[in-house]
Length: 145
Picture (cartoon, rainbow, N blue to C red):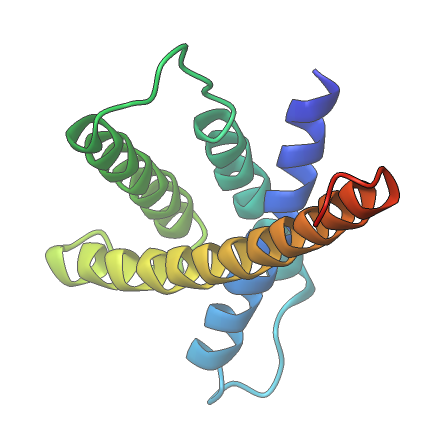
């Protein structure tokens, strides 16, 4: 459970940053962002982070085939689009129309790419740090040539 909460908080921070970025870009022509929208963004970030943490908590016994992984990511993306479309139409961010749904897909796509980019950069840094620690440990034990 602690690992899930850690993933949820991690994704919440990154997704919230991505949503704020998209919201900031889309509201450049407005003078201010209403305070109520900040709480709505937190709510939307929480809902999408919960789904994302759930998806990334799946630990199958054997590696998933590429097709299964692609289907899982597509289902994840579509579920995020559904959450954002429902919430966004309720909050007046998107119209209940085809163009509104296209706006949702683009917005979610931007946040998805942002989150994936941050995730990859941080995971790469963590892997490099782990490799350095393992190399150091090997040298201290005299097992490295």
